[in-house]
Amino acid sequence: MCIFKRCFSNIRDDFFNYINEDEKQIIEKGLKDLDDVDQDELDVLSRYECKTLPTKENFGRIINELAEHEIIQKTTFISDSFYDVIGNMLTSAMLHAVYEDCKPISRNILKKY
Image 1 (cartoon, rainbow, N blue to C red):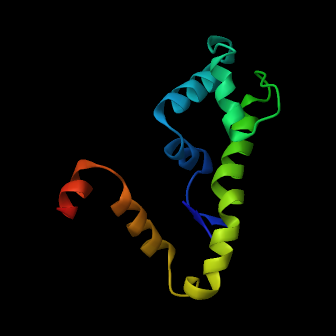
Image 2: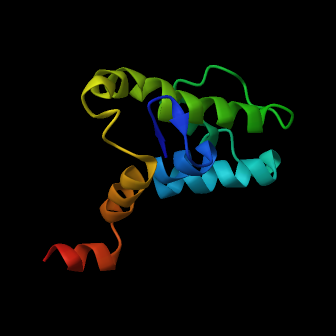
């Protein structure tokens, strides 16, 4: 979880929660052994504006860079805009509670109804 230019969790885990399950499986398979991933499957990286050819040596770094771009850089403008309004009123514990309540799990869905 990242807000106001601070991360309170592992950015790669946040990225895996952000992307869809199929993309997550392809990337995880590539992190284990890039040779097991078809070139067509690696096209999923282009969705995140990846312009680097992935190799065994750089694949982990590429995923970390994509995660930082998607989770931190794209949201910086929005969070900076809100910082003056709610930055001093919102603690990381409060944000974490909101984040957990929004996860689409059966307990949270049933609690809403």
